[in-house]
Image 1 (cartoon, rainbow, N blue to C red):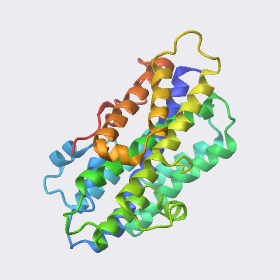
Image 2: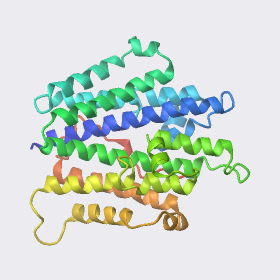
Image 3: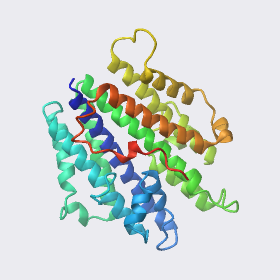
Image 4: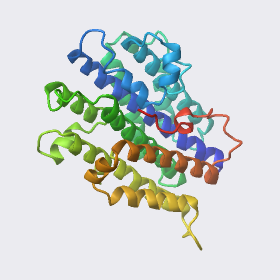
Length: 331
């Protein structure tokens, strides 16, 4: 497979996964805002931290109102991590490899892109409905990909991009809750604290599966364990790392002769580290530090994949991606 094609497939799925995650974050925050004081930015500003764009947001929107956050994450064309920008870049990558992806995949991503242009019907809908339509549009693309694309290298690089982005966003939103939304001691275990943990689970699409898996009261430890270490929930970090490891093994096809290279070492070490650790040990040694290291490892993993499989000089369709250039934000 041409490096250019693999690069585009990888980024199509990273961009759409990013757009879907941000739309869910905003959708949950819209609902959570109903329980906050009018005009409060409390449910909103952590979302900017979760995307790693706080500095550029503060420069562009010094007032930092909820409307500013929504506009920045949903519509801002000068923000490469906004939903509209991500879907536009995913479409541009898809356009360049239309002979590789299926017609139905192209039609879905093209329709989604054009439905978000100024004056389209979606902007007449209530805010939560707009976000639901975008989220469903991304999920439909995944479904079409799963049912129409052959399980060859095209499929594998698509999966790889989706899994890396998913692990990144799950860990970031959890880190935000632990270090930017921690309540005062008097509020721990209170109604607002529980609502915030429920909102976190819903932001990761995990609330119902968490309840099914753990039929007990919601606690920070159990939520962190589920989102980081659950082996069968498809948005947990542990599940994504297993998928990344398996996908890279299939891409490699032939067993490595001699000592493993840097990519083999890192994918194996990441999977082992997050498969054989207990949440109590992570919290005791510093959950933020563990997640920060995970973010750095995911960025390094992306760099090694790009170096090994993608052409460094052929990145015209993918401007420097700030989410990969950044290390984790510091609380």
